[in-house]
Image 1 (cartoon, helix red, strand yellow):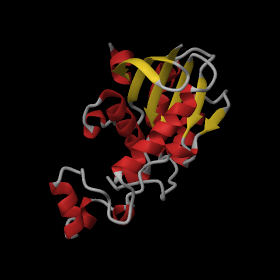
Image 2: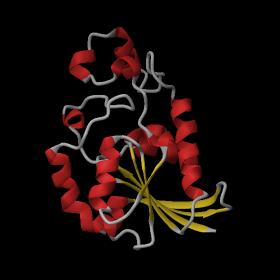
Image 3: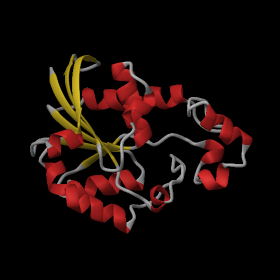
Length: 201
């Protein structure tokens, strides 16, 4: 069965603007700037799918509010597994606040591949993100839109493609369009492009 799945990172929050590690334990709302940026792209994002698309979201406010602003006329299905990474001791802080923490500098020097102290592992994030994706795959309809977080998108795309996690970093309200052949349980064949490539080219 063919499926079209659009992965979209939520709009900006105050913590995003301050370059903080805003994870699953920080339930921030969209900032004014975030809402304004969504408004600028709202029509283009809606036009990526038909009116029959099913809309999914992380349970966190910033994702739900992004979904509701763009697809204001549709019901939103919440998937608990699609929350952001638990950043542990780094949660809510930015580089300036962490630069004197040896554990943080070790994490930076290792290219962000170490586990977060007192937080979640990359494997844990990837496993639950893929559970969330499989819930979408097994759902009804050809088209789906998922509003989630940068960590989920990087985890899903790296798992599906075999490429590196940070190869799939995206800005707010950016993401990927997947065209997949599935058997309702897993993806058998995949092609993808970035949302910006589809909108602006």
